[in-house]
Image (cartoon, rainbow, N blue to C red; front, side, top):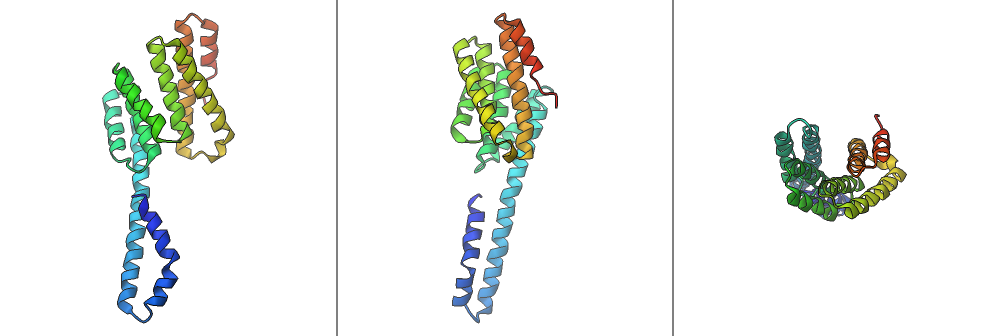
Length: 209
């Protein structure tokens, strides 16, 4: 439904020409008013859908460490409603990849995270995908890949920090999650490879705010 606002703008920009060519035709005026109202309504529906997707994704995230089945249900619904909203789709896929990892369905998690990397330019969701790929590599002892994704995540963190003022409130909340998970995953990896000092430092890097 992204094209409705575009149609609305095109129509409004040409309204003067339309009125001039339909002068003194009351019925035409009624049709024009109807079209304007309809386009406004459809445009509003598009915005509501995005808000709903964000809300479903937020609920899914809130159940990550409480009830993984519930997290799955809300993320799946968000994915179903995310057509035309790439950032919302990417977030839903990130949530579903988390569910797959908890269920140890690593192949499916990789597929979803690969999709995230290809469907959006939202740096926050791309960062979260990188961090989750770090977690997968840690679990499967893929040391080189772990460091590759970690470096990508660090570059994204720096890039996002440079444009932090442009983040929406929803994206800021996602960044808190992304940065916390980055520290937790890094700490876990260092612990299991015997780097206890680095593990402790990574945990200290978590911003409690």
